[in-house]
Image 1 (tube, helix red, strand yellow):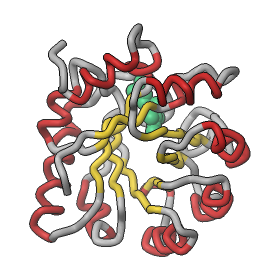
Image 2 (cartoon, rainbow, N blue to C red; image 1 turned 90 degrees about the vertical axis):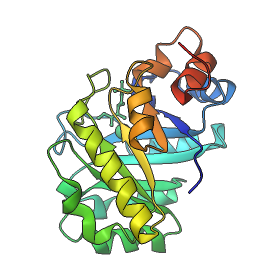
Image 3 (cartoon, rainbow, N blue to C red; image 1 turned 30 degrees about the vertical axis):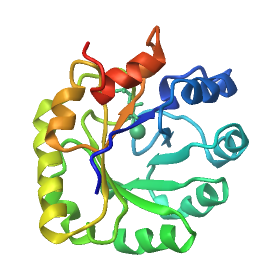
Image 4 (spheres, rainbow, N blue to C red; image 1 turned 180 degrees about the vertical axis):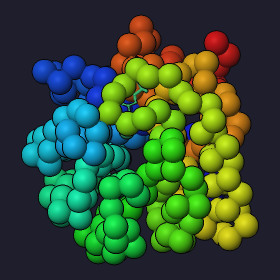
Length: 221
Ligand code: DX5
Ligand code: ZN
């Protein structure tokens, strides 16, 4: 793995009535991926959007579409999200039983597969599938809402995932989601993250391009 840091703005914090402008904003700010939070009102206490929304947005961005499924029974939805133009499809370990099968299902559809864990789930819960995934998404807040405070106790899991990847020559990206901002980003990067998901810090920034550079650690705050 290289040491490049990618920034993935989460459109959960964008204006849902003007998503085309949000795509343009991500492009102009030179952010790397687009993070799309799918919530079902059951796995998490919030609702966002489904595959049609992703499909309709797809022509307006060339960026990697990083879909984060916060839904129960993700296996019933991955086909539609693959068809919608998702590049990465990440689902929650806590929302699935046959985790290995769903990873294969995502890959068979031609997408990259990610697994995510909430703050109360240890890395050991996904240890058996780390060899198969392209991305591990460490939630550093309880999923459902943007703008929450990062739970610093979760940072140890980033370092653990990095250690396991190095010791076993695995290939997943380590992505960190929740409460990442200019104050917390340095410790998240230091712990070993490759991808920083940023909702409120990016979309509330006066200068989103500058915020991307700050989050990456390329310019001092
Ligand atoms: C939370 C979502 C996050 C969220 C991050 O459930 O998965 O992607 O939008 O927002 P911030 O960066 O504001 O914590
Ligand atoms: Zn997310």
